[in-house]
Image (cartoon, rainbow, N blue to C red; front, side, top):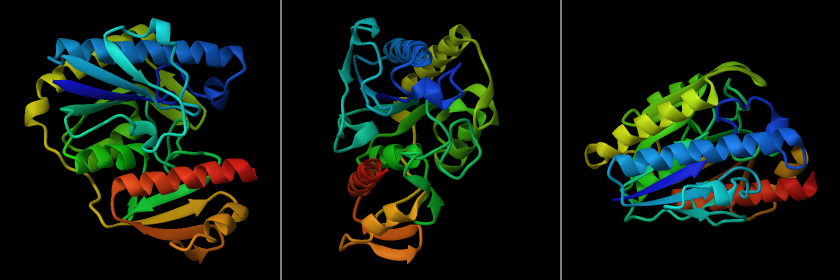
Length: 273
């Protein structure tokens, strides 16, 4: 059984402010170690639950955050950017389940460090009328190719989104949202114990977990940018429709196509900022 684990940083226990996700400061060095150890907890849980292979994708920001030499040596690591499938790069139809660790609520929703793909670029993303967080897109792609979402860790606001969009998945809530930059968190040790146990149980039940996504193709994607210049640039593309000063719409034939376009918009915004 092959399990795919995608790891972000904002939903990790003990992380609650933007500085912790930005390179070049001591807070980031602490946070990346916390991220690495939550990944290790999920890896241990996956193997204990019956996995014989685990692939881990480093999925925050530069996508080169986790400390490779401290990662469980049984896992293979996907790192670096820009990747065609972004946070879910490396998954394929032969995987038996996907686990999302350290994730967070969607752009436009209440949550600790809530955003979708890029806090700089996007204030809102909707897919077929559904408010889209990163699980909507990336676990949506996994479901489209037949791989179920097994478990997700993050804050209580993310838990509410997962319950609505992926009711068959297990939520591992490691902190309570107070506001965008404040949380009440479990200790890292307690969070890792919870992740290991819940991932183990989720992997044990993988064969019977429903494969379902909140959105099915074709996908009508509505993007709300944070600045008009970002929308100006996106509207130059022939497949987009301008729907407002900050807004564009496009239609994608698959989650993979939507992810690629959204990732390109994110890179475009970074260049213009």
